[in-house]
Amino acid sequence: MELDLALDLEGTVLQPSDSTDLLDETAWRQQLEHWLNRVCGDLSLNCPTLVRAAEELSLGLRFTDDTSIAALNNAWRQKAGPTDVLSFAALDDAGNWMEGPSIELGDIVVSLETARRQAQEQGHSLQRELRWLVSHGLLHLLGWDHPDDDSLAAMLALQEGLLADGWPGQPG
Image (tube, rainbow, N blue to C red):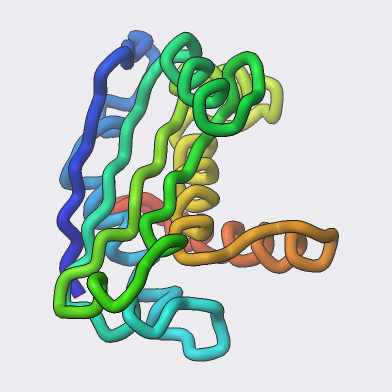
């Protein structure tokens, strides 16, 4: 399966201490392809049939600032203030028109500012926090949700498993 990734870096500013590959399109494409192949290849995991059958998947990944994500959070969720990650799943409204070799998953938007704060609070790297947030957003695009404690526990366990595989070119 191939991934068509649209990476948008509007409003992102790296700090001198940040890894230079944090916002690298090739690395994110490899990471997302790996995660998609892992989830779609495991028949015990929830993954839409049309996604499993697709030859190509397409998604948007946007790293932005708190101001921009707060505006999206207000417009789409009617919640004031910034959040760490938003997912806009195209599959939520998928009908027969979406069947075929190429499937649009939707968009993931991550606030780099919030991710940086959360990484510091959690005592881990910004890279780990961004991977955590993007993997969470990706699972939402694939239909995962966490309306109860059991669903949340399953989703978080899968995220930890995905992160254990490491960043492209680095061990977990």
